[in-house]
Image (cartoon, rainbow, N blue to C red):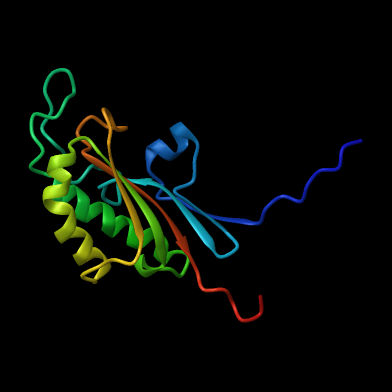
Length: 155
């Protein structure tokens, strides 16, 4: 007989968008005082992409002018999701931005990130990675992060 390890106590959050069921995942998972957030994108409450890029017949973006709008909405979605755990963007310790065009992202990232975090120098480690494809053809950016809550006094 093999002893089963105690399973982790997890709290999860979902948006209720179609791709959660299709892919089978949680948008965010809290274990203890750590929150792991899956890649977020710029969607509204019905799961419609906000500021979608215009794509060609092959599904490739023609240009990247909506990068700023997608990035802003993605940070807004991150903040909303973190709020479900009693956290804010101030709790983020590491973020990873996956983008289709690094130059377009760099052109707007400083301004958008500073506004999202409300600080001239956001206090989190940040990675910006260029990728060849994201989940939806008109999607230009996806952001994943890890946040840490302050330990409770009774812990």
